[in-house]
Length: 118
Image (cartoon, rainbow, N blue to C red):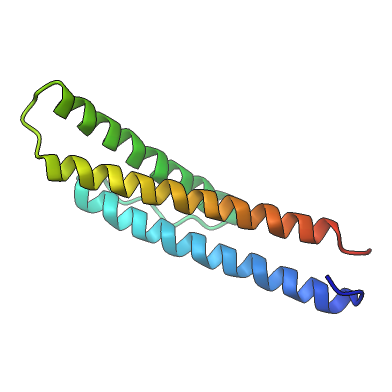
């Protein structure tokens, strides 16, 4: 980072705000995907960053659980469409990869913030 506090601080805040916007977009996309695949009620929009992150992680976990259940059903020989199984597994994979990328960006932002002079 640079030796100027104001420039480094503004860049760090911008980066965190960009990450927050990405998480909100992905959470909404996962919410729409889970609403299409299940008939559960849509919950109220989270208000804090922690709630948003928690909701996104729960959505990814639900996607992985659904993919695992469909895979197990297919392996047991139940009547399950293979395309549905593969789609669920791919959605779970994309959600997990997105979660890893968000984690990596958050860790990078944390390291940048911690290395800033006070």
